[in-house]
Structure formats: structure tokens, C-alpha cells
Length: 607
Image 1 (cartoon, rainbow, N blue to C red):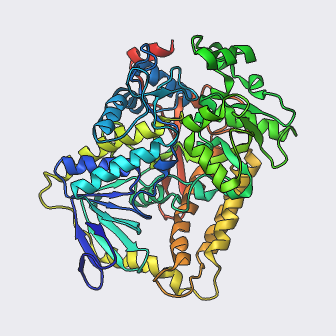
Image 2 (cartoon, rainbow, N blue to C red):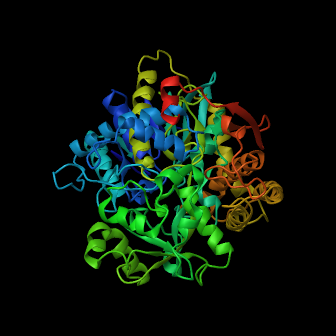
């Protein structure tokens, strides 16, 4: 069934539902987890904040990274594992990176078995394209709309299996008994009516935190809900200082500001130029990647034309390197009139090639902005896109420190280390979505007496949700959100310093005080101000996690760049930062944690 405001049994004026597994979020990770849980025999429900199918997975246009060897027979999981670890600057959870590299090809094949229509090679195999940070062309793709095809396929399968879906329904609290998950508390966004889900297993698949920043590719749903829910339940977050600013978000015209330009544009020949017309990425090749990156325009162009010498163009360095280079050019005064740089594929490829390989990019910008990417360059710049940090989970099961609570996709942490390679997100969703669903189901199945939801906790969750209606003469939540976004953009953005980070933490504390007197007008039906007031609690927690971890890590690595500590530090390369909610529940505690020890046979790949 698809849930609506009238479904379910009333329980004291409140809906109540019982399941084995409740999945919060309906992107690629949530759908794959729900399918796995259902297939393992669990009574499963999906609860999603927006409409089914409206997921950020759709934005992953380039493809699914999987070492299938269809383009380069030399490719294998070991090379993909090494690329992932190097892209994350060795801070990744090695076991997660290993499982992902080993299992992604099978998950791609599974998608095709379920009806996904991939582009093909001349031999009829699934086509694979080049992407930044990957040694070989390994992204299985569907034009430049791979994420959309993934969601279509998974959604169709979930609906066909009869998995219950509660759309436009937001989870605000998790319930526990004796330290174990007992259920979740939610409300219908349309009616404001509350729901209690009794379930011993909850899988968080809520995505990222981008709406804490002013300039972001993320939609309104990305307010760090899963991160905050997990923390309030007693779980920890890891790697929260690492925020990926995608190098190529549109900066002009205003109608498409922040909209992503897929990495496929660079993978298919696009180059970056500054306002002087110079192809500047050759000036920013780190020593770490020097041996495999082209040093001259001629070398790079030869690679695009025949791909026989595997010296890649510098435009295909990992995203953190490209974003920093673009930022440096803009700061040096060589940016475009609207504060970006130029991404040019029009002078490199024929209009027919572009329309065939990048159909969504072509139509999207033509219709929304009257920009013809076959005839003119795009004005682009870094935009907040993805958070590498998330709930700390067990690599094999995706379970958090709280029994019965799992996290997958962007709201889980560890897999990507300090920087995610393009294409690794979709493989991550599939590999760990399946694992989380299976383990959540196997945990729930043999339980005798299940953890019970305490009615006092239900009452407390209800009062907490309604608190903004009780305030008189307070502040509008939209004003606080706008000020928070500006503060995070200015002080915790792509380049950071101690002074600015300390200032950001002071400002976040001030926002918390202001948030205590947020006022919401009207009633619970169709009330976006109320919805934002509840989301803002999560945004403030997560923003503090990012700023506090960024202040503690005194080096530059991956998605974290400190102007006052411009290079990587070997000592910092041996540990992760972990954050938890403090005892009062009002702020964040932070501690260091050594990296898990990698087995010797895997260390050999980095000799």
C-alpha cells in the first residue's frame, strides 16, 4: 500500500503501525535496503519525507563505479579498492571500501536483471565511462541519468513486492527500551497527524546535510535528519569535517544556480578554463597523482582521443583537488564575471556527440537557462554537494552503536574517508543497502519479546514536536535558517581557518538560543513553517558537528581544507574524529579514534 493521512488504525487519536523493519528514506539506499529486508522475510515499511521517487540519487548522473572490466579487462576490485582508499586519502574504513569494490559489479548486474537499461559497448556489454580518481573507465551508466534509472528500477521493484510506503511523512524521534530500538515517531506533513511505528529494526537512509549551506546542490529534504536522529538515540558520527564541494555547480544564470553539472562532462572531454582562457588544471596536479596525470595539453588530448596512454587529464583528478583549484583561480582574480570558471565541452566535441552522451545536461540547461552547452561554455563553481561523514556503523552489517539501528548511504560514515570518488555513491547505496536490509531483518526475525515503546516517550515526542506552537512573540524559523546557511557558507565552507571556525561555533550557539523561541503561526495542516522549525533542530546539531570536527583537525585532507594548516599531516592520517551528543543533549562531544588496522595483504596495494 501507499500510506496516506487516513490509513492505519487510530490509537488515542494517533496512528499506530507495527513492522519488523522500518526504513527511513526512499532514495537508492533506502529502497535497496527495503527490498533486501522484504526478501529476507521481514514485514517492511518505507517512510519518506517527500514523494516516492524524489530522491537525491537521481542527481547521480554519471554512473555506478564497479570494476566489471567491460572497457579495460585489466580492471578488478583490487584496483577499485586502491582508487577508493587513495581518493579518501587513506581515512576510509578499509573493510567498507573492500566490500564495496568486491560486491558492486554483482549489484550492477542485479539492477540489469531487474530491468535497468544501461548503455552498451560495441560488444553489447554494459558500457563504462571515465570519472575523476578512477584509474580505469568503470562507471556503468545510462547516458547522464544513471541515478534516475536506478530509482526507477528499485522503486518499480519495491512497489511490485508490495512494500508499504508512507510518503510525505517525517520521522522526528526514535524510541528505545533498554538501549535497543523499539520504534519511531513521525507525522504526516499534510495533516500534521502523528504516527507511531513499533519496530525492533530501523534503517536510516535519509541522505545528507546540504541545506545547512547557502550554496548547495541539495534539495529542501537534506537537513541532516538521519544524522541527528542517530545522535539523539545514542549513536556516534564519524568524519563530519569532510564535506564535498562538487567542483562544477552552475553559478550563472540565476535560474540554474547551484545545479550540478555532471562529472561526465569532464569525463567525455570537457576542460576547465579561467577568464584569461587558460586551461589551468595543469598548474594544480598534486605530487600524489603526478605519475598518472597528463603534464601537457597534448598528452591530455591524446588520452581523450585514444585512451591508450593512461595519463589522465588533470580535469579528472578527485573532486576535492579540482574544487580547490577552481577556488584558487577565483580568489586570484581569474574567475568569470559571476564568480566561477568556465567548463567548456562545446569546443571539444561535436553537437551530435554532446546531445547523445549528455542528453539530460543539454536539455536541462537549454530549457531552464537558455544555455546551449553544444555552442558555449558553462559558468561553474564549487557547490556544497555531499557529506562524507555520517553515522558510525559496523562495516559488514551497517549497524550503529545502538542495537537495532542501522544507517546506509550518505547518512552513514566511513566508506569514503576524507573524499568520495564520483560514481562510488551509487555503488555504496546498492552494496550497503542490501547488507543493511538483510542484517536488520535477521536481527528482527528471531526476537521473542520485542522492545516496547514507552507511552511516556510517545507523549514526550508529541510535546516536543508541538513546542513551536506554544511560543509567543518568538522568531521566524526561516530567518534563523537563512542566517545559519550564510554563516556555514562564510565560515565553514571550502577553505577554513581557526578564527572563522571558532566564530562559527559561537554563532551556532547563538542560533540555538534563538531557536528555543522559534514561533510557528497557524495550525498543523499544510504548515511549512512548522516543518522547518523541526528540521532546524537537526540542522543545528549537524552544523555544530561539522564545525567542531573541522576546528579539531589541524591539517588539510580531502574535503577539509585549512588555510592555516595547508598540507596533510602524517599524524592526522592515522585517526578519525568521532562526535556524540553530550550528556545534556544540548551540544557535541568530540574524541579521536585510531583507524582500524588494515590487513597486510591489502597494505601491499599501496607499497
